[in-house]
Length: 335
Image (cartoon, rainbow, N blue to C red):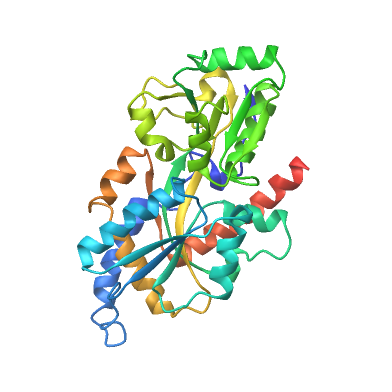
């Protein structure tokens, strides 16, 4: 078996040191106990309008997540929300704004993915996760490869056979340069010994649009950003970069089944600006931990094949530190 695996923290079969479902239940229970103390009794979140920021373009994974989180918060807490797409620089634009300009009052939050780790490792001067406030890891998101229904490739074997016989003839779209998608694609092409043209976009949604227009031959990305098109058959998933098949796509093989162990999961979480009140951070994390069964949040994450992988602030920060160092070594190994 060819082994070409991303850092453990981004592998599909790695969920951290504790059971994540239990972790969010414990956090919620602990919050109920702590709320009896005078210091925490008055802390509730949210009680006013929330701004939700993403580095993703419209239709990208981060955008889709926040546009499902927003109505969930609105419906449950009778507040208003705003989703703000701050696109550019492989996440640098949004990260720089959050780290330097956002109000740390707990009502400006940003969705985060491994892009927040990768971009600062590849370019100096970009805020790192330590320059912001990690609040919660929410999900793990599987990475997949899909093509247009008009594509001649019915299976991943068809795709690989053609790519191996026709170097650099195929183009594969990704969300943005320097993203986890690009690292997965690099691993994929190296492990399978194919050569293809990488086509970066402003975000995963733009990559899907390019595939719908048949401007690229395939896309490496998550099911959620192409969900409607995968469900109606306009797009066809060829393989999953995980150890096991996805429940929603039982007929789609993993790449590991062909002998290539290229596995990856993208974490999705929430950051706040630096300088936040720790008690507010805990209040936000507690609320987020209690939303998984609410709508439309529940439909969003279950249909998108996401895994409930909650981590609270301290555990998430520790996780980010481990993954950041693993990612640093991994990127240096690619250069």
